[in-house]
Image (cartoon, rainbow, N blue to C red; front, side):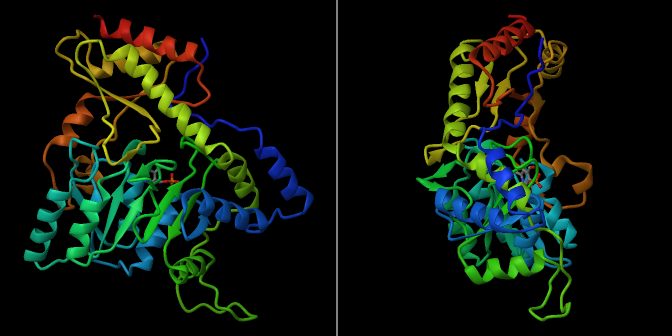
Length: 375
Ligand SMILES: Cc1ncc(COP(=O)(O)O)c(C=O)c1O
């Protein structure tokens, strides 16, 4: 049986045309017209005012934090239920992530807990410098509530929309609502450039400043003059060509991801003890991964045994992200936990959600999973 992956790349067929154009024009060097066009097309799709194509989403987050002057010893509020790449850049700046647990409606940062955490940090004499808010598995956080809490305390917000391109919050694209937002085009994302990211921003001057940092902080002089530490974070012209080919089909990809979720839900929700990631009323999730919860009681198998059974059938599935406040690397960081993400982590499984999967592939996963549940 062919292997079914969690979320592999899915080519649109347009990528090669753009890559050929890049080769034909000899723009093999980093930057170039494909990068400019990819940024412009992303702005047109999402409604972002400004965009900067970068080598990864992690690089985009690092630059976003730099723009907000986050430095050694500063505290940054971070979603706990996420991939570590959304908190690592805080550490690159010798700052301290402060983790906030999630609510049940969207599995994203809990605005009430956030408010309590901010008040507590302020009481301890440490007002947080920024907040990085994740849109988990393609579903937006409750941004109005979160941004209201942060703006009351004058704390700038960065949206980590690495997983949620095409996801909407009140009809607006995730990543474009806060002053700064971050996208990822890593190999497993809804569209991919094989690796890459983008910084979105309301303020052209801020994005210009990020571009300066991303290109080795080179001053505008004929010789190489540097007054700040820079990074080599820009996207290459070839990589951007792939991105343009992918972006052409983003809406088809969102529709297929959502159809995959619905297909699984229709087949599996009648089984005892199986739950699905809810869709919050405030937006459209891109359903990047179909996430199920498995209550072990009615079944004889544990979540890990179920994962292993799928694996034996050459089907990749994955536990949910292990919350950051439970990760050894962050053991010394403050956290505000309510038990929600820990419970989800203990019961969660991400199912194969590649947009290239056929309905037969999905039926194969459902058959194997049903047998694995031993019901
Ligand atoms: C929530 C989240 N933040 C940040 C990242 C980092 O993006 P990248 O892999 O492009 O560096 C990822 C995924 O890779 C992610 O899922």
